[in-house]
Amino acid sequence: MAIVEVSVVPIGCAGVSLSEHVARALKTLKESGLQHELTAMGTIITGELDAILDAVRRMHESCFEGGVSRVLTTVRIDDRRDRQATPGEKVGSVLERLSR
Image (tube, rainbow, N blue to C red):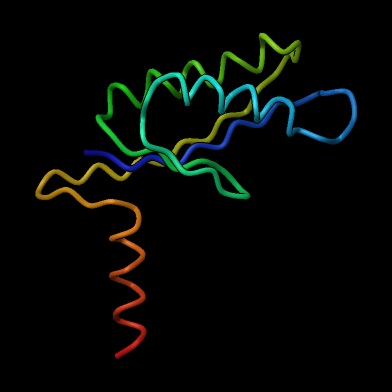
């Protein structure tokens, strides 16, 4: 199972707000059925890597469907294959060490 952080940033939009485009990209992700968490700076997606990469491509394309002519998408992949870990477990591990 992979944990992927993705940030989709449309460039050259009218105005400075990006929330309309981010909402469109998130809607395509929700349609994938993948587990995800929206954060202030990106979205964390958990699941099989092939399914995630397909969803990221659709998120990226959704911005063009919204009328922008340039999109910058950043992807970070944590693909651990010795055991499964959720984003919450990763955070919990760090918090546990902090409390010692």
